[in-house]
Amino acid sequence: MDGNGRWATKRFLPRVAGHVKGVDAVHGIVEACVARGVEYLTLFAFSSENWRRPADEVSLLMRLFVTALEREVAKMHANGIRLKVVGDLTRFDAKLQQMIADAERRTANNARLTVTICANYGGRWDIMQAVGKMVAAYPQICDFSEDQLAPYLAMAYAPEPDLFIRTGGEERISNFLLWQLAYAELYFTDTYWPDFDAAALDVAISSYQQRERRFGRTSAQVSVEQKKAS
Image (cartoon, rainbow, N blue to C red; front, side, top):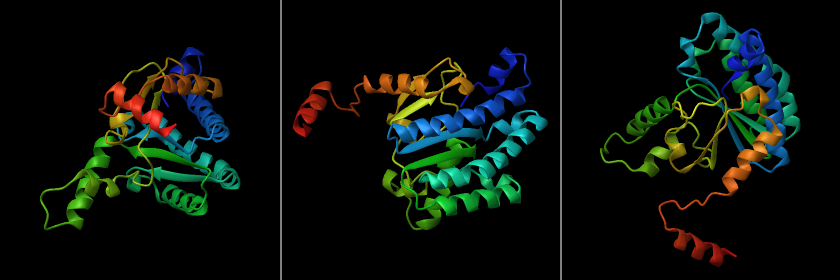
């Protein structure tokens, strides 16, 4: 969800205004995903590198996180939405950690849409923490498989992403879901996150629908399998 600060600067507003508007955009995209039958939505809210930002901006982002939890969790639960928060949460204060735990517990049995917030998250961190847990679970083994690692990744509960969307004009993954994005389709847009709405989501989905996903196979093989399935 990139471009909050630049959205505000372009309008001669403080960066905080962009982050506040960005929270509103999250609400709209969650509603749009529910309406379109999307089952998993993962949002990169705060990376492990974002601690390098000015202290007042980081403090604001933490307050916005608390406010969003206070305002949205009851609505999400009422609409059958499950909330998950992944990342190294130990760096957050005790109140925020407790709010996250309470929200996850309250919405745990909802199945309409799973919204995952990646907070203090990094793809490299995810792989390293998963490796550590895997090695601890199998101390006598030195030759591991991908299947053995997979259950220890932060998003082991979710399928691998079909579509990666980055707003704000940058064309890089920026340490997001490095393991999980291996075969995802990548979509980049110049639209800043606060302006990314249901119509913009539809454009991204349309781009995805026009692509052929081969997963290492040839186009001919894909065509044969599609004919068999139909």
